Image (cartoon, rainbow, N blue to C red):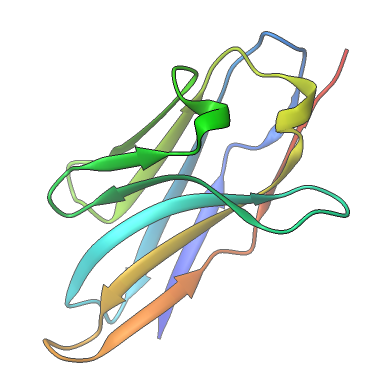
Length: 120
């Protein structure tokens, strides 16, 4: 069993900042990548940012220069620092992990989602 637990969502004014956290726990052999996706009402879920075990990252064009993804020292925690937030960033944010429960068994896990609302 693998669990992803997210925290840090909330209501913030345009131009403000929020930091999301996600911690993976359970039967984990190795985490290959962790990332954040978001889904706004009436829209498809989209990738926001991803960080790989090599520490390389990728970002959606819409958040480049405003959002930063990073990992904790234990490597099973990922953060998303969101600055200069805009109303169009409003969405449910989901943590995702590509991991292995054994050396050959791959598994993809999702968190329960955390609401981010950007509004004045």
